[in-house]
Length: 72
Image (cartoon, rainbow, N blue to C red; front, side, top):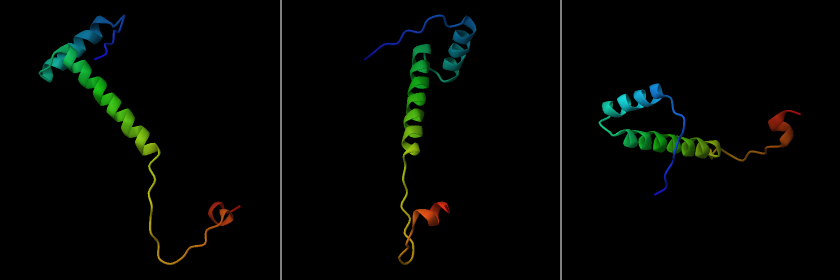
């Protein structure tokens, strides 16, 4: 498994993360891993939804033209 090293993290940030870890019954490392995994999952969901296509069935045959769609 790969490792990350983050430098120059303010003490107040570390203290807040430690308190957050305690609330979730995790170690600081476990809390950070959870935060990173959640962020990576959210990024993947955002990327996937950006390219999501939906097909809608309509009644009958439609004859769509560029001019009809964009009114130009």
